[in-house]
Length: 309
Image (cartoon, rainbow, N blue to C red; front, side, top):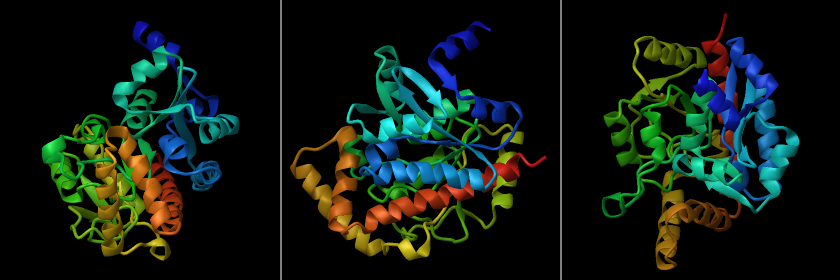
């Protein structure tokens, strides 16, 4: 009881989301970093609202997660989404940053790891994002490995994404996920996708073709008392696909530029995403928007299958 009271001081779950959780209905968690740091305004707010609407159309309840004035919010109003989209005072919040942002009563947009952790605290089983973090290129020198991976080994929250972000070392990321016991299943194809591209030059460890099959696999995993996430890799729609060789060439050029300018840590990903959008003439932004919406629809379908009564 004391623990629940302690959590309630810091977490606010909106009524619609709370009712759905209590009724064991389908709820889909959504991260907020993509709104505050992943896209320019106004595409960020337009995408956020459209993603929530697509979740609803598939029969699930959206629960965008963020920290506002030091309170963790599970489920946001349109005004709160607008605040995240238009403010330059929203911090990027990974797992290690949560206590600081809460204690200082700041605004924070949650990453994959922090959103997943909060979703599990709230009792939400499914989480939609764009692409997960992982092992960075040259990690053998920098030890730069995303908290997303370790958190996936702990949280019973299935993640629907367009694979691993293209800027990372995808092969090493898949190796680490295998080591951590996280099943990786790609939807409808044998090759693992890489965010902007349906290709990655890496075979997917597993393949399933329908939301029903995936929901049953997730259910079996947790019924067998095997903790942790399932990574569901959903290739972006073909019309927005950027060939792997093309995007890889662009990324290598931008990574070299970031290194020359001394950009590191949390600043790397926003820098690279902005540079990719500029270099590709907006093709990458269109792909990003498309894949998030595509993931939202699939995530809601899987959640509805999982909670089908």
